[in-house]
Image (cartoon, rainbow, N blue to C red):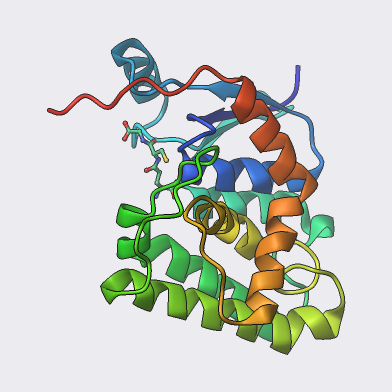
Length: 226
Ligand SMILES: N[C@@H](CCC(=O)N[C@@H](CS)C(=O)NCC(=O)O)C(=O)O
């Protein structure tokens, strides 16, 4: 039995699950993956019984000393795993790179409301006719393009490696669902550096494994209005 269990949601739509799952995968540690179909009341009740916030991703770590540690919220899961697996450098080793990686990860966590609302994650769909060139969505796109370009040009390219800061970091997990949204909604980024990074994320082996499983999963249940 693996000592880690990660509760996730629908692979097609659950962007936060993808983030937590990618962080876990990049540790290389075995873990049990439990899919919670949270639009079904019985699954939602199960999730609520386990997780104080009632959300996924949710990590359960059964330690060898018998103690069980529970971690929820994608950023907290990333911090926990970075602490447990220092050799994996889930945060960049370089302090300046780490400062920016933490900043852009927090920014993803707290910002980009227009992008999240209007270009929501629909991993397997292709919807190229949604307008992305006006208002708040355009501002979010411009900001993400700028920060991807800055991270790549200041750190990633210099350190070697195709990710934002060179090697894979928590920041890449935070932006993985954004890369899939850009593909879903047919967004080509104005910066060639940022556009190349989008393709790096889409070709990441763990991203592709998540997507392959999403194709096999039953589709999410329809949203019921309350
Ligand atoms: N801030 C949380 C967000 C988690 C979240 O909103 N998860 C969604 C799935 S993407 C969820 O659990 N939804 C279930 C529900 O609201 O019933 C994180 O970073 O993990």
